[in-house]
Image (cartoon, rainbow, N blue to C red; front, side, top):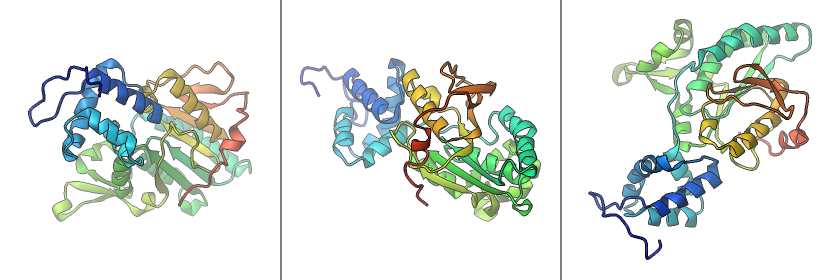
Length: 308
């Protein structure tokens, strides 16, 4: 810390308030490592989310915590990014996307399979899965339309920046308060009711859990540890935290992993205007490949085998 910097008085509990310089350091680090842009109004939010971690480590200033983050081998950086992640989500969020799947994409796939134009394997990537509601929603819907008994194979990859939320997502346990978000027929078929001390919980059934693989992935990384292409990529309500440059870079990478006739779903506030021919819009926030192919597509899509 700059010795000439005037530090505000310590808060109750011995923690010094975050200075403008400390905020600038964290902003730069978070943008560099995760592509997340924090504007000046986010200073209080950042300080609030990191304060608990400082107390856990018995560190009294954000400057000292910053030094620890940059000096360690990366584990504390993961914890930092985990603490600032926004994980609010729910089952079948943005219903029009699921309606579009049922009314247009699924019938299209079934017709293509009957005519021999598509194999009976479906690969889906939930690219910012948070606590798991999105991939489990997709699993229920896909199982309902493409049951294994009909010869279809479903594979869902669910990734997120936060190791903490991934752990919860993989467990597949949710508050019973979320039951109203799930259609009744899916609730009965795919979710298990808790009993005894777990009466206020529900758990995703084995059928849908078996087709989802959870893995940590930073969308801002230079390369993704993935293999092959996906028929559907859901990357919703995460790009709103990126600036224009980071957003464009991530979207271009996503298209490198999208099957030639695949679909990319973005969040309702993440509409993108593609002017380079890379993509075309099917409906608002749903895209497929345009006439132009990214020259890096084949290289990126087979860069590193997935870890199982």
